[in-house]
Image 1 (tube, each protein chain N blue to C red):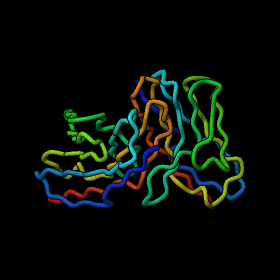
Image 2 (spheres, chains in turn cyan, purple):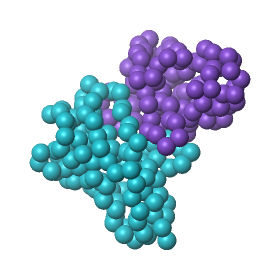
Image 3 (cartoon, rainbow over the protein chains, first blue to last red):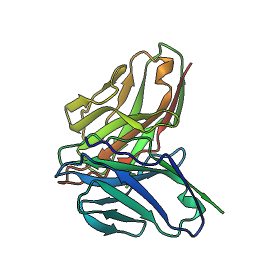
Image 4 (cartoon, rainbow over the protein chains, first blue to last red):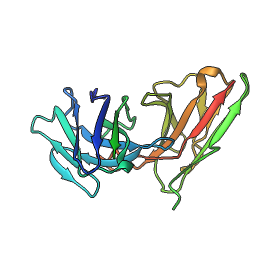
Length: 110
Length: 114
């Protein structure tokens, strides 16, 4: 499994855009990049997944440069309810064992 | 469609006691797994299963047993609880879709061993 590195914490204010960058220098050709969100006392929840370029859904955008050695999760116009831990995972087709690091704790303030 | 259901939500055990954490999913997912999460840390994989009758060890399997007799259920057994097993336990399930690593997690079981 490719190792990932992401900031431990980030602070933001309501209405701002939050960008979390994850480094994965050893990503393999078949690996996908997946982000999960975890609120206190809850299990992680899938946010978005991508392989290359840009992926967007109703919750977030995922930007992946051509070399795929990093990726950026973008949360537009955050609210207090976006306060959570965000995990970046990298895994391939045969990797059914998800590897979670410590994640990034995002705190949104009023 | 309930997703992934874990029981109980909270449990206190004495050292040396045994218990089973239950996990059930109704999405017909083939892959199921158990994780533990300690304060301030990410999730660590305990055991996983890629289908009924097939299980394997994850990163921290010692002290835990699993079995998978049906697609829906994946119980986690603590044979002799130790204080080091105090943690929050999450069960997850996912499909075998090619390239799809999305997993669905239960709400967790908070276990305290005294």
